[in-house]
Amino acid sequence: MTNEAYPIEDWLLNLPLYSPVNIGPDIDDAIQSILLYGDTMDAFCPECQQSATFIAAISTQAQRLAQEEQRQIGINRLGVTGGSSPRKVWRVPTFIKTIVCTRADHLVHFHFISNGESITKIGQYPSLADMATGDTSQFEKALGKSRLHELNKAIGLAAHGVGIGSYVYLRRVFESLIEDAHAKAKVEKGWLEEDYQKGRMKEKVSMLKSFLPRFIVEHPQLYGILSLGVHELTEEECLKNFEVLKAGILVIAEERMHEIQREKRFKEASLAIASVSQEIKNP
Image 1: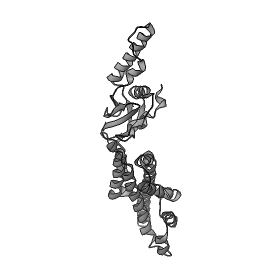
Image 2: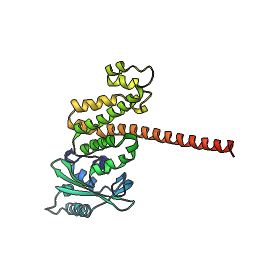
Image 3: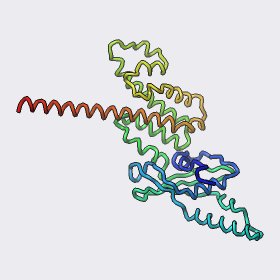
Image 4: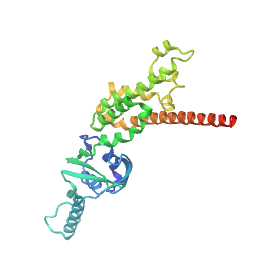
């Protein structure tokens, strides 16, 4: 069985704790694929405090199991009685997978258990939340401390398997972005506040399109999905789609950050040109 048969990188970096993954009768192949996985992946390194490339390590446990599998295969080929199925060698109750930061050899450990035909991640250090929220600090200027805290709260809840609660905080971030745009729009001449207050979120986004990041304008359904998660979806359904919705919020944050940087450069360039112009007039 090849590693490509299973989303191992996703299991390591994104799978919440205590969320069983049903594998089926090929549980041996899945455990073997995880333990012998040796590819590289990109993730935030909490120790380096920046993005890094990690490589999956092959543990001594995995090496011993691989040797035992080969021994069982040899026994079976010889027709010696007492040999067990080589595949069952990999059916261990607990196992650990480690990835190594290639920047400075920092380690991230993932602890799994197997139960029947499923595997469950029961531990991780540094935590999934530490790795998932690390890259969000760059958006503090774009979102503000309060919104960044709520975004990180959503990420932390999802990391611990709390899907509905994570949607609550993502929706609060979205609503605050809308309110920021509303505060700018309502002082403009010709603004129809009464129409705005009566409108649903889709209509509000349409009215605020000149003040909102393009991603919100083009994907107003994002709010509807978040609201559906809060009121109707199960924890599992929310967790399944959390990464997609989080990515949408991060795209919005990136748009705001780029706008802030653009405005900063505009002001700096304007001041510099004004200074040069003054020098030329008054040599």
